[in-house]
Length: 196
Figure 1 (cartoon, helix red, strand yellow):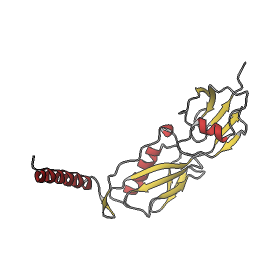
Figure 2: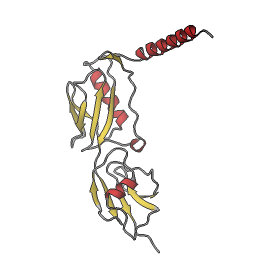
Figure 3: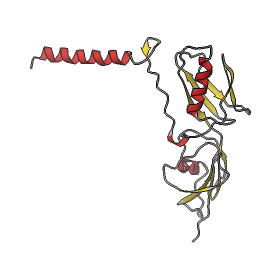
Figure 4: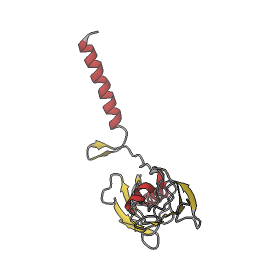
């Protein structure tokens, strides 16, 4: 095969890929940006926002409207243009859609908004750990990390099963402890004493 034709075909293929990438979204600062909503981390699927949660709101192409916001005691955040936006008891996806709808109502033609949890309500770890108490929540936190933050298990701890009470439930539930067991903001984790 002719090396010149091979090189020309490869360059043509690269040009097609680059042009299709540029056409995938509106230009922002000379670079094409696809308006794709941020994925919600698995542990936060269905999580409902509440007072004290800090979220990062990104309005694509509008950096002055984007930023970090803390949900106040009324379940609202204060944003430029739209004022108080009620997002308490909404999921991250629902909060994004609510802010989009408010921005669309006379302010922006076709806003694209994402919301991510930056810092959630603290979680609590009780029972058979060396330092029980309240700890700050960070995204991606697992029970294994939470136990390590609390000074590890005591020698009497049941290391196989734990009890978890979520903010949205009045009852504790028994959970098998695995390396991927997630902590959600506001959870209360109780480590029981094992029976010999």
